[in-house]
Length: 76
Image (tube, rainbow, N blue to C red; front, side, top):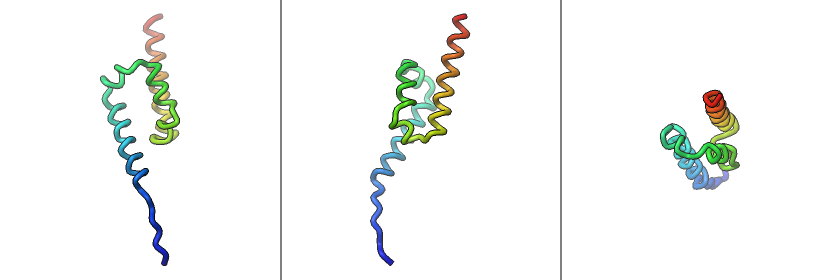
């Protein structure tokens, strides 16, 4: 049986970064301090999609869109 070396350094950094993103999203006070336009840019970035996955990204985008809809309905 041949031994195969697997470099998990990149995987470990992805897991660490993913935990940071989850912590940011769960800290709603901090998350809402980021301007809405920048929050959309974060969620739509390739890095976010890579770290969090497509379904989580879609969920985060829907949450932002719901926030925009609530703001629009409040203005009218």
